[in-house]
Length: 108
Image 1 (cartoon, rainbow, N blue to C red):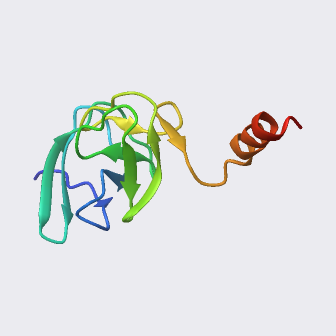
Image 2 (tube, rainbow, N blue to C red; image 1 turned 180 degrees about the horizontal axis):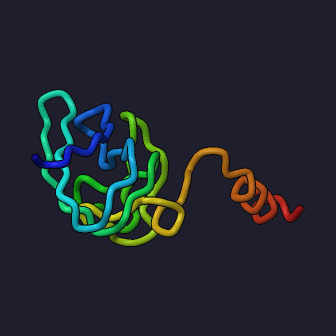
């Protein structure tokens, strides 16, 4: 019997899905969101709760999860690749960036 891995992808516009258990590299997973279906070979081990790309994502492109932008790709990300802090720069809650921008514009 084929091993079925559970994943979560809330919106068809999402570019990532979430692993609901650890899934090993080279595993082929099926991801379904409403009427959208992907069959993806994982390029990396994906830990429980971690994200992987369901489509190729170009550097600088917004990354959507649960229908919301969670960050921007800091490098090209291949389909099936782990998406985490090594290739995603968050856009929310980045007070450090706000402080740097403020220092630059106000001289503080």
